[in-house]
Image 1 (tube, rainbow, N blue to C red):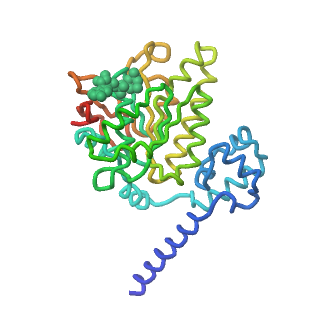
Image 2 (image 1 turned 90 degrees about the vertical axis):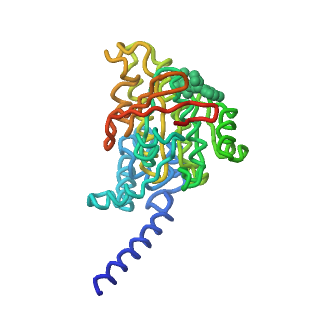
Image 3 (image 1 turned 90 degrees about the horizontal axis):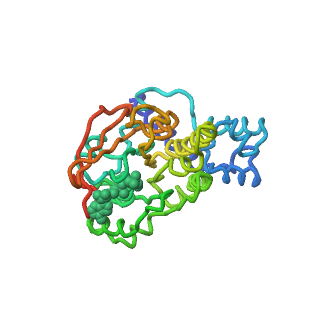
Length: 333
Ligand code: ATP
Ligand code: MG
């Protein structure tokens, strides 16, 4: 009995502690004044969790903080977020609660263990017209569905690097689901990225309104286009990979900072894959991208409107395939 009471007390205390942490913001950290806060916000760091996950060297080099300040801040943030070790059962409890966004196809969802995961980065890669952009459009609609229907009751941010975001398509998909398309469109925040620097900035800016706008999905379609066209030839490849790496880490940090945020980016299969590797299935961006995403999906064309999705090295999913279709109504079985 006494033990039970004790357990209850612990869980109430935990809850209180969680609430206290949730209500803390950057400004509550010792030594963070308006000037430091602005620097952090400009770098896309808007919460204590994001700061806790930020590399100290980048705080010094990119954000412009002094070394001592950077170290102190990150340490304080990590303590607040209790970022030490935890038991596997605590990790399991967290994963059990993890929500997913339906793709619109039962086959595809099953392949993914229920849909696109929150708290993770999913990469969708494949040749042109394999449906990468169609899927990301569909997810922007589906994330708005209620929980019973496979959504997260949230909004979406869409970083469009190729100019292929189409509200018309969103309207078709929303109407097919009997959703009010005006509301659906309002809940998708689109940023057209005109070059790779702009793309990086937009991803950092996105951090500012994730909480405020109840954002549950962040899309980058596609991650590589600008990087590929701006950094031509092997001479600048190292530079390009470094920038791409830090961009992808910004995305990872976001997915890890917000429990209910799914991050999805698309990637093209290189037309000249031998520039990087010999295998045509290997996508552009090389190791940097492959190691940046938690779940990688390779798409290829099937008959007519059919497409085949294959899971490529996810930590908990077998390498299987699913067939889905792209119809006027959107992604279906
Ligand atoms: P890219 O690498 O060129 O960006 P992608 O993988 O993003 O290609 P999508 O634009 O997602 O390709 O897919 C295009 C395909 O989606 C078309 O070939 C067509 O089959 C299908 N599609 C697009 N719009 C519709 C629609 N309104 N109704 C039915 N199918 C459509
Ligand atoms: Mg596309």
